[in-house]
Image 1 (cartoon, one colour):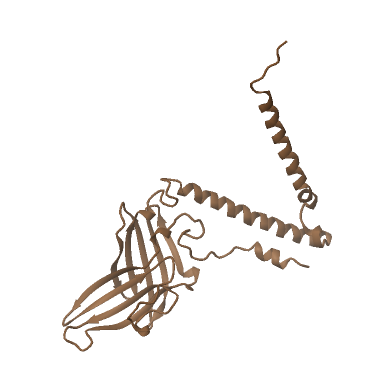
Image 2 (cartoon, rainbow, N blue to C red):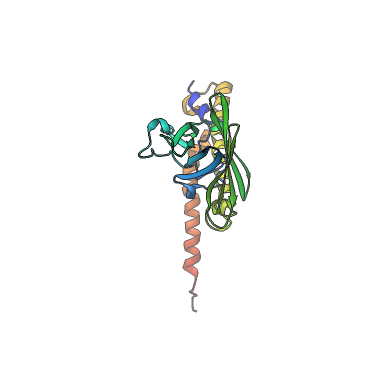
Length: 260
């Protein structure tokens, strides 16, 4: 009984993160225009020193290594968002000392740990990050609609929770396809396509199971309504020929009338 591959295709598939189709399940938001390395910092005075929280982020790919920075002072390869804490002290032998390096978002972060919520005009990308020094961490990226691009700003970092806010035209109404309002339409088209695809897969899988259990069918006999699918190409050709014939006959009569 060779039904396992067909049944496997009928199961829901987990969609990987893609910045040009966010949320992945609907493709309603395109953030590909935000690709590239972005940086945000926030200073906190702690006399006689100053602490700087620095975030490097690329939501569409992994961060490149920084030249002139030790590997131990950078996040590992495959990181999308990296938090670095730096302690500054003037006059010290090492005035800029890296104290903490945390990969907040990695390329292999499970899809279940990345959630997108909100509405048109304001979206939040929440990422459940790995623990660091026994403290659970989370990244919250709030994207708000704005006429001009401002880049991300680091709003806060406390108790393992880091919040970034990014004002951008990319999340404004109609920004998904750049057509001034067509994003919802194309999202609906994509939804209909994938819904039809999975319904068709389920139809063949369940029909094959039924034919096998009810009639002991094997091979091509497993296909539900086999005769219909076998004759479908011929039906398509007949329909196409009928349409073409009607078009030709209607255009052939136009602009001419018999005299006498």
